[in-house]
Structure formats: C-alpha cells, structure tokens
Image (cartoon, rainbow, N blue to C red; front, side, top):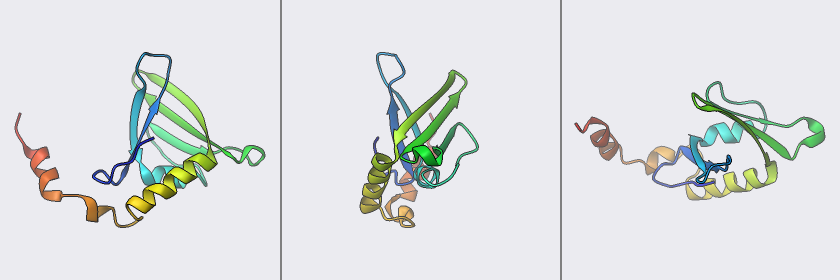
Length: 111
C-alpha cells in the first residue's frame, strides 16, 4: 500500500495476481475507511468487513474488463495504515495539499 501527500484522496494498492509484476489499483482513502466498518463501493472497487466471527478480516473486491479478484486483508494492518495516512494529511484537509492550478493545467494540456 502506498499513500502520497500530493494525491491526498487516493490509496494505491499493489496486488500480486500470478504475473511477473503486481497490478496496482488506485481508489479513495474514504472508501477504505468506510469499508473497515461496513460495505462500501458501488463500482470496480468494493470493501467490506468480514462476518463477526472473522472481524479482523477486510474483504476487497476488484473488477475490470480484464477480470475480477477478491482479496482478504487483516483489518488491524489496514487500520494502522489508514491512521498513518491521517498523520500525513488529516481527514477533511485533503484540498489543502492539492495544487489546483497545476492539476488544471495538466488536464487542459493538449497532446
């Protein structure tokens, strides 16, 4: 997992799926935070806690035109990671870390 201050809304996770290189997915930090407590995500990434008997497990489901994958991760590890991201960029302060002018310039730049 990776988190960068210059992309404060995003979490990057690399998954090893039997290929030489891991597959990287980028999704919302808020999606992970909500998914630790209850089902979250309507699209390609869904996150939800396991049943009460296995509460220390979080499910992560990924889908794309190339296939689907389901992963289980320890909730304590994901929670610790998430708490460290809030030390880097506090919740609700993400916009303070984005350079809007540069982002717009990059989006509007013609190839």
